[in-house]
Image (tube, rainbow, N blue to C red):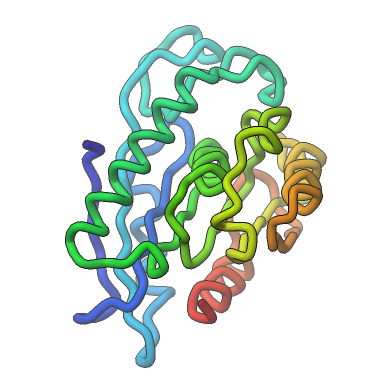
Length: 216
């Protein structure tokens, strides 16, 4: 089971957000955003998992927290399918563990940034759990050519929030946009949000994410 950090904005959470970090970071990366989501009408519980520590090819084989290996700078090519699917199973196990604690799948939002966002998209389009929503930031579909043959219909009408910076040098804007278009073509209720920034999340984007999550 993945280790994780838990934070709450209130005593009785109505929603659970599982937020996956990016390459080389850890669960603490997005922990500071929690106060932004305080709302008197809807309490939220956040879970920030830590990815496994493993070698990453593009970083010279250095070991770091990573959801899967990245083999080349052009991240859309030569996907590490084995690693992606292993992380998918780890995230599914985490979702199922939270369901056993009392949350319903329909209360769970799967979110992620960069590599974590890629795993969120991959998992949400294949799981049999009906989710409340999906937030995918500065990321892409890691195995786009298998989306149509592997997709589950359970989250076809689940809202997907895709956010991306116009000047992202890590996950190119075009790669993120093409992933959004693939989701729409496959029948998912995805919305596209772009921001004048590089590889990161702005305050404006956080406000949009807050509105999105509180609307679920």
